[in-house]
Amino acid sequence: MTTQHTSDTGVEAMELDCTGLLCPLPVYKAALALGELRPGERLRLITTDPGALQDIPAMARQRGDTLVSVDSTAGHQTFVIEKGPEL
Image (cartoon, rainbow, N blue to C red; front, side):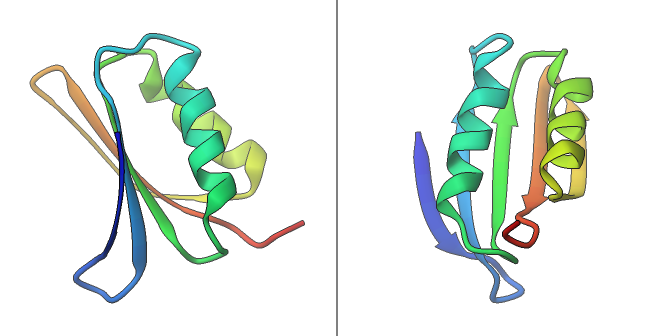
């Protein structure tokens, strides 16, 4: 499920819930969602796939996006990714 909101810092953000999905779907869906954002906007991605802890940072690096934060607790991973400049 994808929702759009403005964060506490005033940055436009999208939230994407990928709980229950396994590789490669969280990476694929995150890349699609980031494609809808403008540079500087953020994606908050929630996953339960432990492989996402390596896959999502690698995807962000390859795309030129910034991994703002990662939180892994109780079998859930939450990533905040800021879309980088358009290439």
